[in-house]
Amino acid sequence: VAGFGGLFRWLGKRRGEEMLEEKSGQELSLKGRYPGQQMDQLHRSANLPCARHLTPVAVKVLHPGLVHQVQMDLFLMKIGSHILGLLPGFKWLSLTEIVEEFEKLMIQQIDLRYEARNLERFRQNFLDVDFVKFPTPLHPLVTADVLVETFEESEPISQYLHTEIAPQLKQRLAKMGMDMLLKMVFVDNFVHADLHPGNILVQGPAHSSAGGGEQLALVDLCDTLVLEVRPPRARLCLVLLDAGIVAELQAADMRNFRAVFTAVVQGQGERVAELILHHARANQCRDVERFKAEMAELVARARGSSVALGKLQVANLLSHVFKLLMTHKVKLESNFASIIFAIMVLEGLGRSLDPELDILQAAKPLLIKTAASGL
Image 1 (cartoon, rainbow, N blue to C red):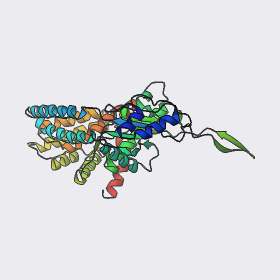
Image 2 (cartoon, rainbow, N blue to C red):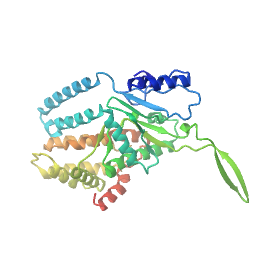
Image 3 (cartoon, one colour):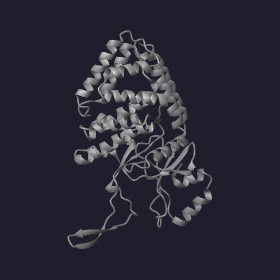
Image 4 (cartoon, one colour):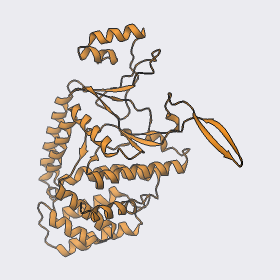
C-alpha cells in the first residue's frame, strides 16, 4: 500500500481520496518505518494546510508472502525441536510443546485483527495507569491484512541507555517498566510477550502535543498573586507497540505460577521444587530430596545477591533452573515459557537502566494482594 491514498484505494474509496487530494493540494508521503515493527510500514501524511482536525496514524500492512514464510519457519522449528527432543535430557525442556505454543501465537499475530483486539484489551487493563500507553486501533480501518492505529510521537527506550542521560530518569523508566510487567503478570494475567527495546517507546517533555497551548498558573509570592503563563508539561510514559504476541495462563496455571514466584520471594527453595514436581506434566525424578536441596541452593543464591539486577542475572538463574530440570528429568510447563522469556528480556533492559532495581521486593505487594484476594 503506497501511502495513505493507497490505503483508501485498497479499501475501494477512490472518491474519498480524490476529495482529500483536492482539498489539500499536496501528495501524501511515506514518513518512515515505525520503530520495532518488522512486518509493517508506517505511512504518515505530509504537512497539510489546516490539518489540525486530522489524526496522525500508523498503518501496518501485512507483507505479501509472509504467511508462507511463517509456515515454513514453524515447520523447520518443529523438525528442530523433535530432533533435539531425541537427545539426552532435552525431552524435559518441553521443546516440542513450546514450539506448539509459539505456533499458536504466530498464527494469531499474522491476523492484524487479533492485534487490534489485544491493543483494546491492554488499553482497558491500563485505563487507570497514567504511565503506560498503547496505540488505539481505528475501526473500521482494521482488517486481517491492514491495521490503522493512532501514531504515538515518541522515542525508542534504547535512546535512554546512553551515559549522558540523567540517572534519575533512567531509574524512573526502569521502575515504570518493572511495575508495568508485574501488573501484566500478576494482576491482569495478560502479558505482552514481545517486549524487546524496539517495542518500548518513551513519551516525555520532548513530545508534548503541538496543539496543547500554554497554561495559566497562579503563583503565590508571599502576599502577592502573580498570573503566569507556562507551557504544558508532558507526562512521562511508556508506549508499547506490536501487541500481536501475548501470553495468558489458565486459572490453575496462574495460581501455580504465583505460588512459585511467592516461594522464590520468600526464599523457600524447597517449596519451589515441591510446586514444580507437583504440577509437572511428567517427571522421572529419582532423588527428590536432592532435587529440593539443589533448588533451595539456587534460590538461596538469588536471595543472597539481594536480587538487585546488577548482581543477579535472571537469565543466568533460569538457565541453571533449566539445567536442574534436565538433570532430574522434570518436565517444564510449556505454557510458562512465554512469561518466563518476557521477564528475561525485560530484565536485561532493566539492568541497563538501573542495576540496583529489586524485582522481587517490588513484586511482594502484588503477591500479597493477590494472595489475600484469593486470585
